[in-house]
Image 1 (cartoon, rainbow, N blue to C red):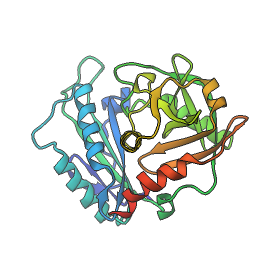
Image 2 (cartoon, rainbow, N blue to C red):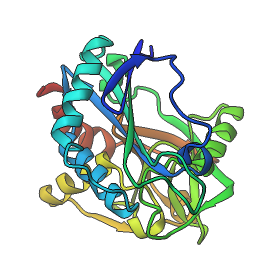
Image 3 (cartoon, rainbow, N blue to C red):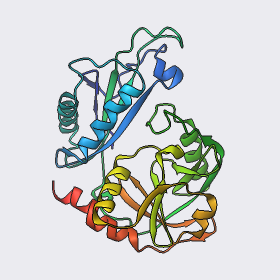
Length: 284
């Protein structure tokens, strides 16, 4: 359930209050980005990675950085809003950052505006999924592989259309291709496959979002000495893989039962979940 209140530029308002101008550049052009975070018992899971990515995106998209716009302040405001909405036990947070009003060439300024929302999350989402996901490949859009493709941009059209396509076909998710016809990611998650005993995920240069759970898992897997690589994943690799799983901040890891006509086993995903994801939820 969505919260009754939201935070807009540091002030709390009723969630149904209209706050965005028709001339807002994010509304007009998708000029901004967002973070989706998970809160358990009042603490943000992988908060350090989320705020590191947030400020990196701020730099990449040429926003100014006001002195008061800090991770500490944002984290405090998120915690206060989640508490006011009664979402601290298990909640999802969306923090959107965007430029203000203006045309394409005449933004009023490069000051970061922000909007924080919270939702209650079912505690069942803190566990590995019992039933495997059913996914397929969306081929009507391609993600660019450029300087901005790793950012969780407010310009999300390819993912929006892939999600509508998946829902129409009663799929749990859809894989999104890049401009080279290889796998970039899924609509709300990064993609991992296991092929010939090696855990593989599309490299950042393949146009995927630089997910915080993806980054956390790669760090843990490498530290454990397990075989892993960031690489190109083709459609043939998807068919030849023995296993597939998706990762994001909200759900951790979700294993995939099938992609199109290809079915998968699930062996590696439960091990990774137990070792590297479950402790994030139980140590709070």
